[in-house]
Image (cartoon, rainbow, N blue to C red; front, top):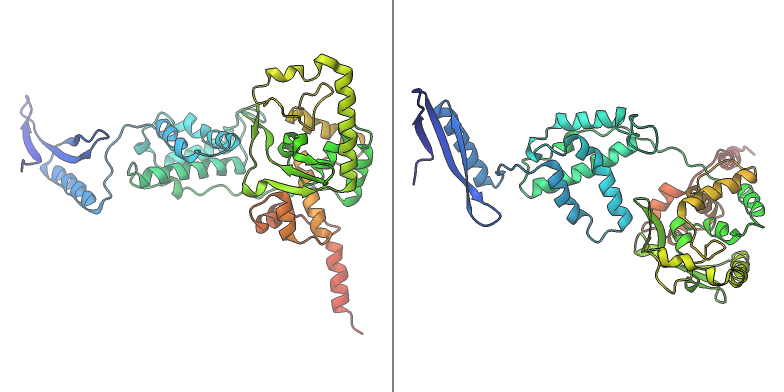
Length: 394
């Protein structure tokens, strides 16, 4: 066997020691060799011993010039396969700060200190949108980025691209979710009364039926059976990278059929009659613009549309909800909080959490309880009354 360490003498008479050692095969099955030159023979032998020991244990990592961004491209191919377009966008967005600060660096050069500096930068000046650029991002956004980077580096470690996952050594910033604003039963009724004469009265009832925004806007008349009094959630219309897309439900449980109450059946029936009148009045202009929508499938008749039969934009729908609650004189909540409101009120009314979870399309009743069921200060009075009865001395 050829001696891996060879003594060489430079032109000026300087003696060096060159290490040439096999380190495995490249992607094409050809032998790869590592060449290093040292001032001292013992340093070359120490490196040779280290490489042989790690190869024997299966922990040796071949040197690579692949950059962080190049590896993240590879990682996302597998990590987002079979994912919804919105989920893919969330993965990409979470890794944007990493690409900006570390993207051109060799993957194997990244240290814990580099990631600590990335986290500090994000917390102080990493904001690019949804606020004033150059200000700090929230702890939740930073945790999402760090979590996605940990997953990418873990895959690189499993693949033998990294010696270890240094991202796991970084402590994420503390994050305490803000308390959700939900309406009381009285406030829900106030809103529905204010929306009684609104053209999209049925839509607001659907949002207060526990449906997500995308689920409401993705409903087609073929998903609704007014005689059987049911609706089926088969898809959603959501925003992905500022573009409207049609996506399947978030999970297997997301596809579900819900019974309709009489008030909602009445509202949907009235909306369908209204749409028939609008179609007749508009003539050839009705739905004419649908041909320009790349996500629209011919034959789909969406429930929530404008007067010309065009499905409303998700952001307009959220904004209109805000305008309507303001006219009703109600305290401000986000459109998605109406879903939290519905599920919380169902729980307070005594509906079992297993039923609420299935109604919401969740995979886990514990998730429903933890995320969507909220107690208000007034609810604490129930505890007061209960304890008063427990502590009452005859």
